[in-house]
Length: 224
Image (cartoon, rainbow, N blue to C red):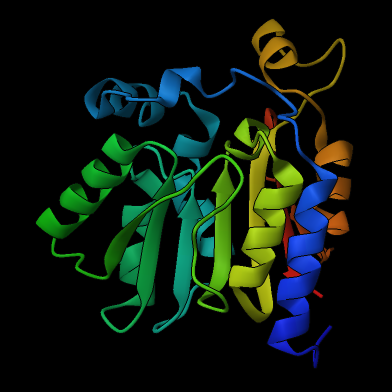
């Protein structure tokens, strides 16, 4: 698809979205209709949460460079948005993407208060990242993919938003029968293999896996 005309890509996208008309996990985002950022900041940005404890190592593995454009899809309280912004510098851009406007507003305000003016907010929908076509080099999805109600549609929109050769970094919970916690088994709809295949089916290939965690996994995909 490297030399595929934009018009054909739009046609393919329009055709493909009809492949998934029903939510794969209805109600998963009910708590995020109008969340209170302060409460979720205390929940997300706390010692003992595996991705929080390893936040600096995670960002290091992303290999961000000055001038890059990055999208933090499922930005939540803005933890990783604020960590990635200095890495891309004033000439770069970090889009804080979330389904909850209160999260987006909080992340933008908290970033700008720290002088991180390169952060912009994007309120997405359950089936569309709402990112502009070919606008980003990397999409970061941390403990959020399992909240995608329409993963195929959402990943197609992400594929369209990525520049040629763009990457997707996926972190999510390991879901293994008899190993994972009761909460994970009840909350996360599928395991790594299922999520990997869904992303590959949207036009990506797995290029790297980092072994940093016990409760989470860290995969990097490249747009074909």
